[in-house]
Length: 342
Figure 1 (cartoon, rainbow, N blue to C red):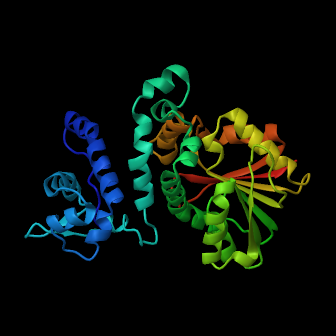
Figure 2 (cartoon, rainbow, N blue to C red):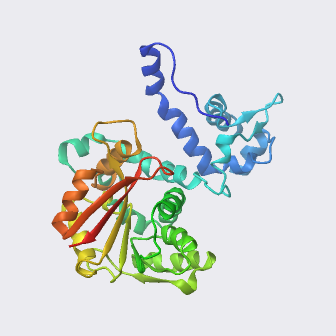
Figure 3 (cartoon, rainbow, N blue to C red):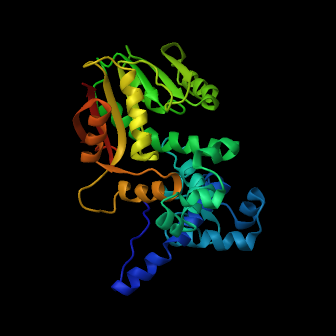
């Protein structure tokens, strides 16, 4: 498999290479936005043909593609035509684990969160709000195309995590599930596919209701699911088992507690099960997913990643008993935090 090489050489060389890493990142994001991996999937494809298909100029496009060839994200034959690689395949729209939506989200929104980190460092507010003059979710509500890319990216990234959750946890006795902030229903789709007797509700904001129903119907789950619109800061539907996947890290402790307390109010004393899916900060800093996401939360949404102990403390304050925090081996960096109502 083609892999992107790591920096090598002296410490100075490595640091300089790292300082220019954003160039390759931005080239990958641009290629994903333009759909270059789809266009070269059957390769080889010439530069002029790619330019026509993407409504770009050949020479500027050449300069964007050059760093991608250099790191193996695209291939190049002896006639200067572009070829697919194992890396570009992961950015193809129809790949089962496609990352194209994730890179499109970075191109459109995420990369710009880092325009002025000093805003967050000096005010505590998300730098995103200064850049876009709106909150993150306010921006998504006001820009339907970005919102579609966001939810498609979340579904794409969540798919692997959802498979890991569905296989790592026994949902046979989970009763009725409610996925709080469940988006397109990606997580419950994986769970219900593996648990024939289970049923579920996807609970999210009103503008997500129709897309979620369509996604669940396409998965053949319309008769075992329902979609309920609402706001988890107001109330949460009653359920035996509640799921919170990539929700709490979007919010500070005060608002996370509000969500958890609404969850607790929707469940019976001593019998309600709560499953939280999040990246969990390690005790010592490492170059893992949670460490990177924590900065995205700081600059973008005003939320934060948390350690296992911090999740346990939040759960205790909200009326839950923390049972365990389990790393998901099939989704590196992600964890399943399990709790029950007291």
